[in-house]
Length: 132
Image (cartoon, rainbow, N blue to C red; front, side, top):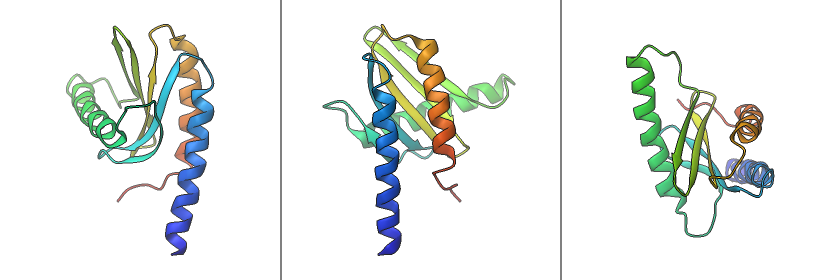
């Protein structure tokens, strides 16, 4: 019971951090903390986005990107940035086991959101336990 309450408290703290990140720009639409194996830990998403589906897609993207950087000897994967005609998806590593996913409108200042996302990732890395 105490472990469940502790996990719920942690999730609430993470959601409040994600909500704060989403207010950094009017062009920010959503953010989520996801495990590398595709489990949504916490999220502040726009209407109509399924957190489980987002987590699974991000885990798949990360797996492919991780394989690509290793195969091409580019070092450790740090981030993935996808540009679509309707917006961007940014994935930033949070330690070895988690990723911060951000959705934004195409008009967002990418440099500023990268800076904010990296700061948020540093904050979150100390909060989430390593997976076994």
